[in-house]
Length: 87
Image (cartoon, rainbow, N blue to C red; front, side, top):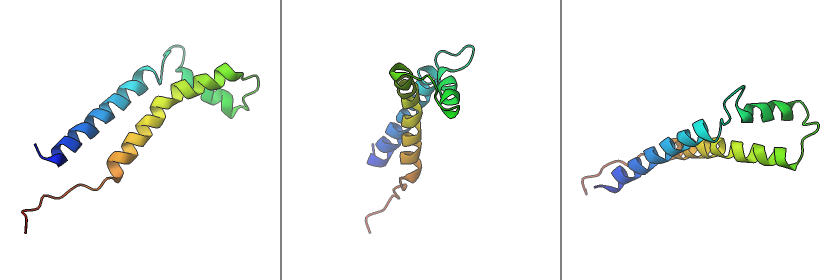
């Protein structure tokens, strides 16, 4: 296998893993609304009454989304390697 093929497989698997994390840990619990969404609304409202545990929740449920952004940035910013015939 060529190194570019291995890189493409790794990039695809990282993207799948990031999406899986976002859909599970990033959105859990799902009802009545995703937990991270409630925390974001709370922060946008000024975060009045937030305690250390609430900020830890934001970090815990926000980490998969940050990882997804990182993987997408890494995938789209890397230049594809062109195959050369050795000339």
